Amino acid sequence: MQLAKREFIKLIAVAVFLPQLVKFIPDRPRNFTKAKPCKRAPGREKTVNLKRIQKRGDWLG
Amino acid sequence: MKVTCELCPKKCALKPGEAGNCRSRVNLDGELIAITYGFPCALHVDPVEKKPLFHFLPGSKAFSLAAAGCNLHCLNCQNWEISQAEPDQVRSYRLPPKQLVRTARKLKCRSIAYTYTDPVAFYEYTLDSSRLAREQGIKNILVTAGYINHKPFKELCRYTDAANIDLKGFTDKFYQDVCNATLKPVLNSLVTAKECGVELEVTNLLLPSLNDSSQMISNLCHWIKSNLGADTPLHFSRFTPRYKMRNLPPTPIATLKRARELAGAAGLKYVYTGNVMNIKWTTTCCPGCNRELVKRAGVSFLGSVLKNGACPDCGTAVAGVW
Image (cartoon, rainbow over all chains, first blue to last red; front, side, top):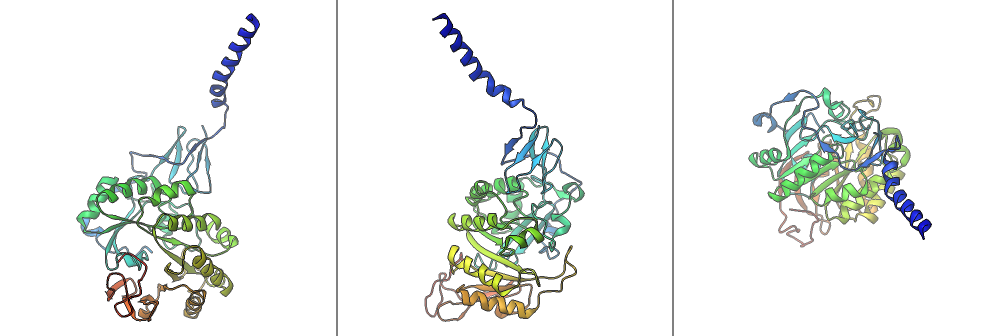
């Protein structure tokens, strides 16, 4: 009875901690479909000029 | 920690600090960050015909935007200055989704077009802006190569009203050699857009000697007819030498004429030609009686005689949002 109890505790411990350990295996990538927004502009910023943007973007296809 | 971006079929596995193939998605401390979110580099008010969309609110204005970067690297890219640039090398506007929708409204645009580069590269910005625009009664237009995984594309289609998807060629070899991509995901996206009820038009840019064989054009047209329907508008675009394909001549007019004939023979009802000034080739004719219904000159809308989306003479309905 005592042995069965000990085995059961061991089994629970493995079930709880094994997934936690797997997380720390190096180079296991995390998968993302969506990315988080960035607060800073990647490069230099320019100001929105309503008159300018009303023009047709003919230099772009 | 490494992250894998599952947005597009390239599935880039990024080490910390590394950017994906599109240059706009970066692994920062184990998180995937969209560095161009809310920072478009090009903003313009275009006629919707310039997308090109010929069967969607003709004569209306589309507030058009793009952020730097693209997940494709077509050797003939027309907008390579921004699509193939590092996002930190181009100047950007600060325009979060709320302001974007407000600006489109202020400029009296009926739609917002996510275009020029590829909205796949600025997916989250497109998705959030589309959701907001839909709430405020503004339509959403995607102009894309459709190189995206099924799940995220389906989610985006929920908020998309119209799309022009580039079908750049009809062999895997062409996609691999010229675009650094593959054909199958693009075909899947076309079918997904159609299934989701998006008003869909297809563009095929004809590159001399690379994708202009009669066989390839014919296969492409037959595929469109059987998978998307004969009502799907198809635009054949004329190539002009750009980016890394300055060695090729512009598409001969005879090739465009041949492509139009092949599309007609395949049973497609609405076939147009872009980058050529020929009013006849940009006019919508009634599939029933051949009457000229919607006239355009290049990308300028000249007028329409449609009555409730149908021909006033024979009453044949013309597919689209009029």
